[in-house]
Amino acid sequence: MNDPAANARRWVVLGVMVCAFLGVDLITPSAFGPNAEYLLAILLGICIAEVNLIAMWAVLAPGNVVVRLPWALLLGALMWYSLVLGNRVHSAHFPRHDAVLLGVILLLGVVVAQIPMWIARASFRWRLVSWPGEAAQARPRPLQFQLRHLLVGTAFLAAALSPARAVLPPGELRTLRLEHQLPVLLVAVTLSNLLVTVPCVWGAFVKSTRLPRVAFLWLVYCAVLTALEFGSLVAILGRPGPRSGEVLLIFYVMNVSQCATVFGALWILRALGFYLVRAPAADASVSEKEGSAEQRQAGGSDPS
Image (cartoon, rainbow, N blue to C red; front, side):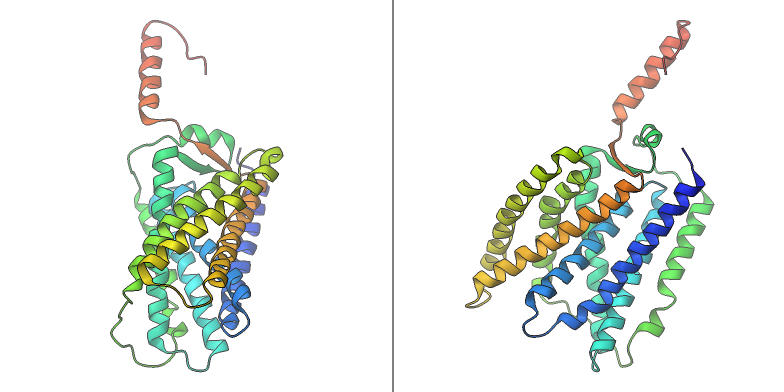
């Protein structure tokens, strides 16, 4: 149930995964340029998947939410540091204003990406647990935390923010102005994550024999949703120019890269012994407790 060797193996593999994602973040800025649209789409898809995985861990992972959310902030800050350092390496003129704006967009992305996950958690009662017996403890219950949870969360927050001054490029910070397209893009990303990424979370934990059929159906499903997403953006923001068909294909490649990354990362978690379970409903838990109490009063015994 609580094997120290298995726990150590999980932490090592999770650390390697985090380092791999940070490596992708470092090289992503180098793909901005001519004749690299599809490579950029693949790398951006991995970065979007990274945001989704951070949001998923914040919402579905085991442990107290007061600790999970600062963990998510720490991972988001590490992602921002890597992207900023990558931009500074590959561009001699990366202003501080753009670095701060990138941090704001990433923060909004992590928050917005949690919305579909909270919807899935509330609708399907999904929980990500590290051993099967933990499913019985995953039932909804009131938010409770101890002082040590708050102290750990505060430590994570301090660790996430302390290197910011050293990572930021030199220069002055102008007033941040978010483009008017950003709210539209955030809404589109939220709906895309809800309709594209959430099925990947479920698909990563289906029976192995069903995986080929699920993967094929998902590619078709992703193509249809990409067309709808692209059509909605065109209707709101206008056509991207004469290369609309190629831009649509780039969107599809980015969505496939995003969800393949989410799928692959969750498969690794599955191999490490994590389970996606449905927590017992709150009313069912109350009924079980009331039934057990009545049974004890009647002189019976709990079959469990």
